[in-house]
Amino acid sequence: MALQHLSVGEIAVILPGATAVFRRHKIDFCCKGGNLLAREAESRGLDLSALEAELHALDNPGVHAPAETADLIIIERYHRVHRLEFPVVIELARRVESVHKAKVDCPRGLADLLSDMFEDMEDHQHKEEVVVFPAMINGMGPAVRHPIARMMQDYENWANCSPSWRI
Image (cartoon, rainbow, N blue to C red; front, top):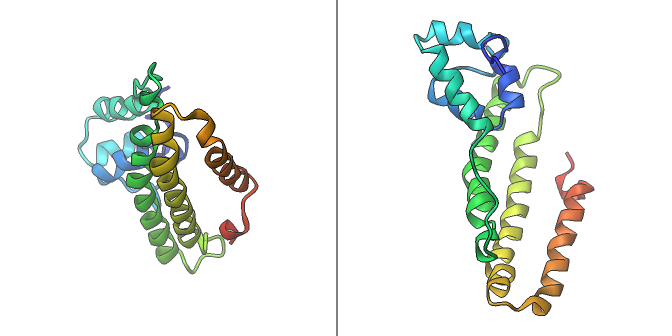
């Protein structure tokens, strides 16, 4: 997909990880989100092809599903990523709320909602790492039936937007 003809705001929405690339190159995807990628690259003296290649690399990270049970544990692939990226997203939401607070369509409360989600997710991930995953690695399948049911209840609550996550 040719990204040069898309706005940086559109790219930020459709391509996970693009905002990190934009921040690294000091490309404003919020207030100047309507600007085309080509225009932003030119105005910053960036090589458009290299920038597009960096963005395209996000779309295909080359991560393959592991074959061994222990490798299926999601601590590195998901938990670590959540712990790294959630605080960044929360900070971005706070910045948007601060800069655009006078606008009617400003997402008021989004940063607090994301903070609550992050706390819930941290609690959930901790339980997986301390109880469920060690039991799985040690081959204690039947012993983890109840903890796994509890983890599944968390997923069900999140899918139904539990009350703690409502604005």
